[in-house]
Length: 187
Length: 187
DNA sequence: TGGAAAAGTTGAGTCGTTGCACTTTTTTAG
DNA sequence: CTAAAAAAGTGCAACGACTCAACTTTTCCA
Image 1 (tube, each protein chain N blue to C red):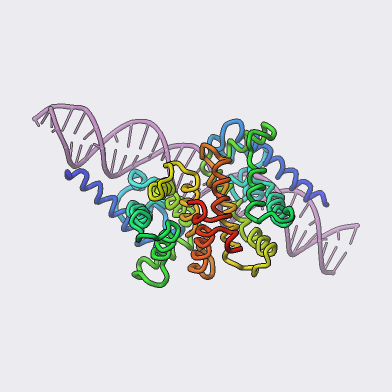
Image 2: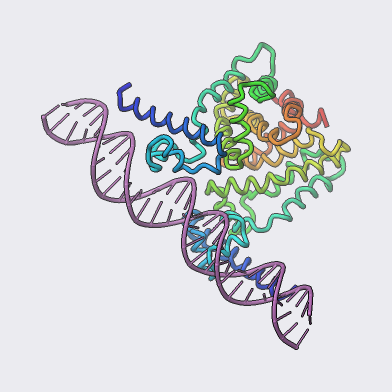
């Protein structure tokens, strides 16, 4: 890796670090892109050469989440249904009081700021196509089967549904119960 | 209603009309709020006294859609399940080639502009709580039943799911089949 | 008729974001 | 090895959405 790419990665990291620190400190809306740029000692234009938007400064590493999602479907235990595997994965990912306090503050920040909620949801829903393909592969359905796509969409949407609800765990379980057995079985 | 409120409503209507005309003409991003204000012969700040954002200029009448949604659940034919009633309503609302050409152009505009897609979805999902309450009432469940809320969320989300898909009708039907009978029955 | 309150205007300003121009680095050609 | 061209990084100025504070006009009502 040449010196150029090393420097580029360094400023990118400096921007992401400064942004995270400032956002956690003062709140997303109370920090301007100019503030982040000054904290990293670059101009505001440079920020947008590295990140497509202000929100993107926070959501920098997103590739491993998709891999874990696909793996939850593909490597599920013998005999476990796809919706159940997705339910387990969703509950496992959910910050049920565990995890380091830094991560807890991050989650609290993203959930309390509308712009970040929206952006985070859009990033998350981008995995719909990949998840649908994984489900289709796991069940032998055609690759563009609408039923698999629907399950993928709703399974991902579950975290948005649970957000802001009093009992998030209960909401997730109710949503996946609906997806697994249908309304006619429960209602 | 006094002259004061009448005038207020008049300028509001003039703004919405001018905005619709200009947006359909040139496209959302090619029209500035200033343009809309000048077309309605007011200042730009006055626009934001009437509408909270540029996008809101397009989505002005939204109360009857919620009423129709609730009615579709409450007044469904004897013996028809709630998910099926919602499916019928969704298909009925969908612009499957019918409808006046003005409405078709409106839909085409909102679906081709990212900012409008997002805004429209948020407006639509605001009806979740009301729909969940209607479902709970129709089935005798407790008012804050998570299962009813999940069905409401997913039923509303169906239009976002179908958007951008090759066969929207097929997507809607697959989604509601999943909600009605569950994955275990179909997959 | 005399104001209190609301609507509208104005102008300056903030913030996210983007062209355009400039500098620096890397690559390529002679 | 060096000069020039291609590429990448950087910054200034600007645009558009949106806000705030002060002020003028209009409408309401006592």
